[in-house]
Length: 152
Image (tube, rainbow, N blue to C red; front, side, top):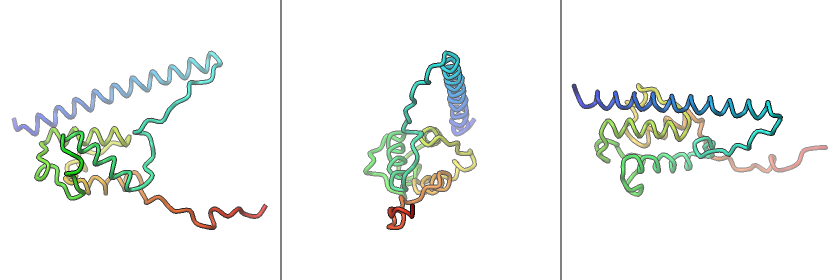
């Protein structure tokens, strides 16, 4: 059995475990909300985690992807460029790529289909894919008409 099949099976097993953990968390959250509503208390305030924060601009997206990539592949962030190829330049194997994809999915709260993940071989390809999925656009500058109050 080729090693990439084993890596794929590990990736699928980890994804199932993550999905089960997510389902348990959702059920726990729903039960906490329901119990707080039933007891007529205000639900506890929720804090927005990093993975739920919206992407403000493409530079923030790039920095987050570079950070995740460096952490997952164990390389210094300064050695990574948009053109860095995961296998040829960084030395990642198929298991590393599966873990990288799962980490990016977790960070941005999305699911990347297997067919798409197989074609993402550089950081720039991940950035392009995430930009489309998250509708990343450069942060707009305030225009004078937007800051001028309208008629009353």
